[in-house]
Image (cartoon, rainbow, N blue to C red; front, top):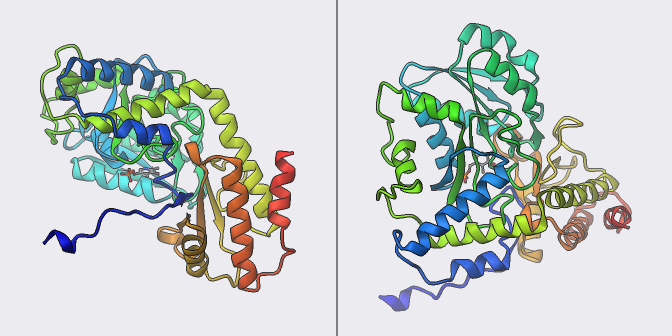
Length: 391
Ligand SMILES: *Cc1c(COP(=O)(O)O)cnc(C)c1O
């Protein structure tokens, strides 16, 4: 039988899509270290270390800060199911795919969900939420900080203030934003937040960092019903991550090594330097794309540096370009989701992937493939514009 199973030989890829993104070599090395037991003193110490590094990255003192075993969507479920009891009112802001997913998760958790919608590519202002906050009186308001389907960058500070005035808790999706732009959990008053390892943390998919504010913790402690998910019950998880160390489930040991090393890399570089690097490469890429006549889909002033969602030029075959990038250059970018299918390319500059060589290589490859399709521009203009931005 085993003769039928070929040896593992994944192709070399340059991951420049919406995630997973490029994994740092030091993170890959960390994954390959020897597995210890999940109650081994070494692992328990590593969990403490991870929590400390995550608190620094989330810029929070929240005691309940840890990594859920699962991808970003597990973080979404974990934050929602712990805060919501059947019949609770929840408002979800939807301007792309991930807001819709959050509304779906909240409904399954028994919330009475009110959807507030904005066109794809646009962001929410306080005014957009005003009447809904009055009418729905939500226990929780959910919003996506970096909408990976559209490239829109949602400001949170004012919305957070207004949600609290209305007596609600603010729940934030920071899957794509964490590690790429500032995420200020305490300063902005975020009550529950989740992320994922495979976007700006330069790590493979598999863990979902989360954090709950003392206010959220109070809400969880005063629940009248049990959390609908045993696996994601924050009180049970807190006993495992806290000082009691009560066995709950087997922690994903090697992924914890990987996340630990990934967070060490970010803190070694320094948060400000890391955010500045994401911005620099985004601006260089934007300059290169502009020279090719390619524009962004997100509203001006609200564009994410790590996720560049741009319009496929008129007359260009979206699928052929993405196939050419993958087959001829080993580069993966993302296509459009939902309403943007066939119309948008999503170019990720996340974590370890946000580098000069990736930007210039991608632009050169794109120019080559566009020229093949007869797209009019002067060859080399994209690379030249990006290069000028660097120099
Ligand atoms: C990727 C992503 C998710 C889902 O994360 P998975 O790791 O795929 O489960 C949720 N929200 C946003 C904004 C994302 O970009």
